[in-house]
Structure formats: structure tokens, C-alpha cells
Length: 111
Image 1: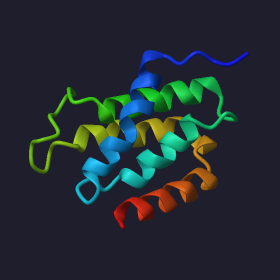
Image 2: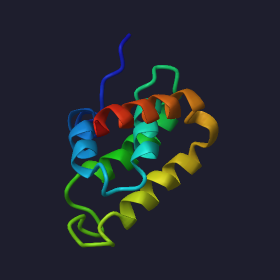
Image 3: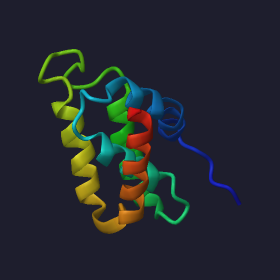
Image 4: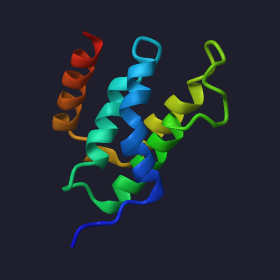
């Protein structure tokens, strides 16, 4: 039986790559965010890990958050804290394979 996507999962799948493209060169944690995306969309990832990462990624891509992203130097500080905190919380579930895919994706998107 196929899993039904939560509203956050739908939002992340729809908006993640647009947000990545819009923030290349402005956000230093994109590689980690992309690795988290690959982990969250990996069928082998446990549901609780997916839920943790999807929640953090939804916070990153949604326009309304604690510190508005348009504020110079401060705009993404809350986003980085949420994304990196989620990655720490899920431990080794974000694998080297997810990170390698993230590096490759970031290189391709930067060209």
C-alpha cells in the first residue's frame, strides 16, 4: 500500500527545488537541506525521520517564519537552525549517499 502524503510533504515536494534555486549563493546550508530532502523522500527512511525532516524543510520553504527571509544577514538564521537541528535529531539517517546526491544536485543547479 502506498503512503498518503501529508500536507507538509506535498508542500515540500512542490516548492523545495524552487526555493533551492532562489537561494543558491545566498544560503550556506543548501547542501544539508538538499541531503535532508533526499533522505525524507527515500523509501528506506523511517516515517518518524521523514516527519522530522519534512517539518524542517517546510519551515525553510514557506514564506512565513520566525525571522523573515528578506532581512539581510538574519533572514535565514532561523531556517538554518531548524534544518540543522532536524538533521542532528535524526542522527545517521541522513547518509553519505544522500549527501553525495545533494552535492551533485547543487553542482548541477549552480551551472
